[in-house]
Amino acid sequence: MKAILALENGIIFEGTSFGATGTVTGELAFNTAVVGYQELLTDPSWKGLFLTCTYTHIGSYGINEEDNESDRPQAAAVIATELSRLHSNWRATESLGDWLARYGVPGIEGVDTRKLTLIIRENGSLRACLTTELSADEAIAAAKAAPTLAGADLASAVTCTAPYQWEGESRGWKLPNKSRGDLSYYTELPAANRKAVVLDLGVQRSVLATLRRDGFDLTVVPASTSAADILALSADGLFISHGPGDPAALSGVAAEVAQLIGKLPIYAMGLGHQVLSMALGCKTEKLPFGHHGGNYAVRDLRSDAVSITTQNNFFAVTADSVTGDAVITHTNLSDGTVAGVASKSAPAAGVQFLPVPPPTDASRTFAELIDMVDSFKK
Image (cartoon, rainbow, N blue to C red; front, side, top):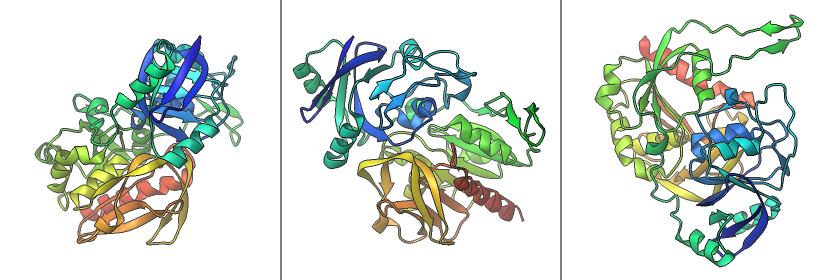
């Protein structure tokens, strides 16, 4: 079936529909990762966005529910150069197209996604419409009428509805271990000797799994949870997750976080880092086309170490607003934007990037939360 991708500036791409049919609107974002389309699509940080895959071929290894970062696809649509007609992987349970159709998410293939990426880079973020039923002119009008991310509170759409305990690993499958020469090797979970509250702004399951592997007993709470209710859980630390939307729309969350600074260690990532920065008095701004990929170099200004990180954000902390008790700890080497902020007087720090999925060198960032918790206990 024919599909049309219309941009708000009047540019039209024609292609072939896959996944669901119909009409959706959203904001365009390109991602430079070569693999991991399932993890990206189910990452709550992609809520409401059109995922443009710069890699030319997707769907080759299919879909399995074990690798989901949330309970369903979160992206509004998928844009691809070519969809694999066959998928092959020993863990796959269905094709990418069938999976998207089951959840009502449309896709379009046959688009020159690298040309589209250049358009986004040159023009900034653009609203778009993907349709199998509207004319080109109608689709352009729908794109122009679509809401933007500016001012959008999307965290409330993806946060949990009630507190819950994270029970352990999200993935139960076995991996080969060459040193043992079999397929039955498991990395045993350590004892949970630290307790953390996770303020869920759109947390990935793999982040929860990583925190659990680092020895944290986890209680996940909704974004609307008050400072008093968080303190009542008597945790050793607070982790504020990443998520979608405009951090400026979460001023109420930032106000609650501000009441917690100095009362327990706080570590934040992605949108959570932006909220923590707001709690420290900083401001945020929308970037021209954001950071979306797994290859962003970040410098730790404290150690001068450089890590290659995964990022997915349209907003960043404004550098000249980091004053008073706040200090910049990390910078993005691609464009010089703020990639980390910490409090000078309290155990509170955040980074823009994600430690998972790989590359794994950025997973050292969880050690900072552990160190803050252990020092605060003394």
